Length: 158
Image (tube, rainbow, N blue to C red; front, side):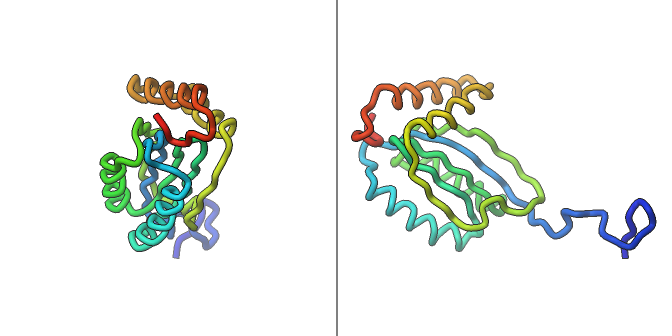
């Protein structure tokens, strides 16, 4: 039995039951061939395959921009990251956050949301304001430029 700092029975290690999770947060620009139907197929596939690997998260798609939060066992998330970089359905991948820690999941169920350009723009602008890596800064500027120059009916078009 464990005792707290005052000598009372209890558990001073609050994270003892929390799993070790890797988190990967990124945004990217959809390839020219990606349309709403392709995004729906992508979501359906991700829900099936990621559940089998213990991966959960949220995927936001709007105005040709993907924003995704992925969490799961480190080895599985690392495999998924490798496959994301080889996926022709998107480019200009910008890693916004990556960490490994013992914690409960923030997104225990796979979710997907379609959003408008202003909401995506806010997320991307916040990421740009805190970005330090020059490649990420350049990619975020390209993505924001895409939002500013493309009409909404050209989702994902270069």
